[in-house]
Length: 291
Image (cartoon, rainbow, N blue to C red; front, side):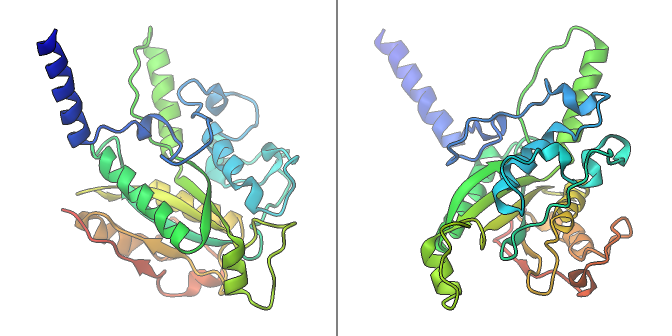
């Protein structure tokens, strides 16, 4: 009995040392209070014939709801979402509402290790916690998050089911993760001394951060980065007053792809007409890089 107890205790120490993380199994960040789970691979909405957005986009929209110029009662299905949120890139006629971010909401893109394919969930956790702590140090309060990466395996009874699950997984992992922060009373008073904090509109001056996965040698996930820009553009987030900021990269192998992608107009796949897109480059804040 004592021997078994010693083995169990030793195993616990090893697991703690290796940093076993359950974050990719749950799309919420470590400090989140929400209990929502990703609908994939059981989310049939992604391949349903109904003209509805893919379920990952619904998850992102749910996190953004408080930071846009619409009411909580407005159905996300009626929003005009990025074209990547719809089957064949075709927006249905029911999506009629132009949704813009509140006028003083800021945007950023952060690059993080893909926690599943890199097998570095602990590093992912630490970077997410660092982003949260940095936002709190700047007088923001964590409001919510959603991540597309899931470290789950499942056996399927048929090849068709397996292919369907793979399709749904690809749809989900094409979208960026998102973290949202609301401003504190102190931040608004400090940044805008001539405009006092409005308790009736507590989410203006908030912060929206889209997370893009990266690989040590493969660099950024181009599709996630492109879709992160599409979300910002759809929310009217590009302007001279709201320049795009990029936090990253984590790995030195991501530098070439970041150099290629960090200007919205440098990539021929990205067609942009916003004022900020005419600027030569988006400002990048570098972390200490690995690899």
